[in-house]
Length: 77
Image (cartoon, rainbow, N blue to C red; front, side, top):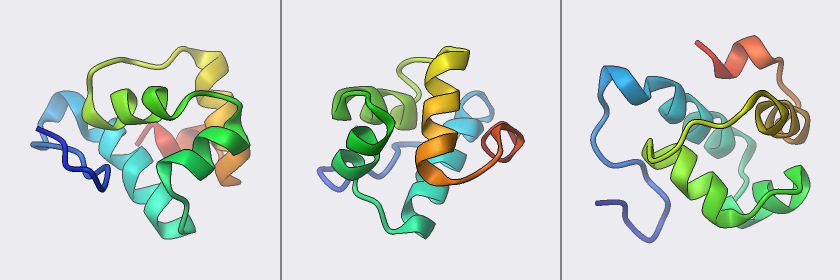
């Protein structure tokens, strides 16, 4: 279960890339709301991606990368 702080629940091989999004967001000092606003997506989308509940499409990934100022390959590690 995810906490109110937006910390991803258990880390599995399946959702390591989602944890990468979380870690990158935290390094930049963005809340889920701030990243969502910068990327033009909903906060719920950020939460679902970080929790491994959904896989973002390429367009969403590009928006997130732009908002975070990172390359796509950085989030796909």
